Image (cartoon, rainbow, N blue to C red; front, side):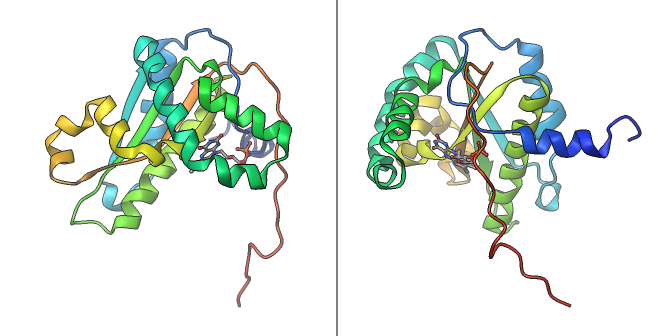
Length: 203
Ligand SMILES: Cc1cc2nc3c(=O)[nH]c(=O)nc-3n(C[C@H](O)[C@H](O)[C@H](O)COP(=O)(O)O)c2cc1C
């Protein structure tokens, strides 16, 4: 591990931020394969089940997804209207309508099983998603993890063809989030981190 300095590592973690506006340039297939194979799939997982499942959506299929993204907005807009200032609310609404022109959306599912606790399965997939976020950062890509598709979970399952899979039919496949990916076309501020009341030290 001699090549990566400690400061480079922390810089990578701290420079990651959610990107919601992208250039229309495609992301090369080898880059997508690298961030999935060499980063996401190297996450730890409960009982090493590697229970993540990824559906990579691009091109016309991605364009077709936009109407689902617009629908997912309806489920969360009221909460956001109370939380965000008007300009940020308008920007977020636009993001849901266009996904910021992201050329790629990766949907992350968990293949749950009776052999593993539910939350362990879910956590394993989110660890893979975080690896994916960090790999995007080092590859010069931007990304935004989105829980919004959960608002219209069943429709997304159908749209992706997941409903035809035997593990879906047996109730084991569950959508957790989507990650919009592309080359960043804006430089948003990084939201600050709060330390207060987040850690309890015990001896
Ligand atoms: C599980 C999860 C779900 C999220 N869902 C959404 C979403 O639906 N839409 C969105 O614009 N951002 C979403 N985000 C991004 C957060 O808003 C963002 O991470 C947070 O505001 C902190 O900003 P940063 O990522 O730039 O540090 C999600 C993030 C996570 C981890």
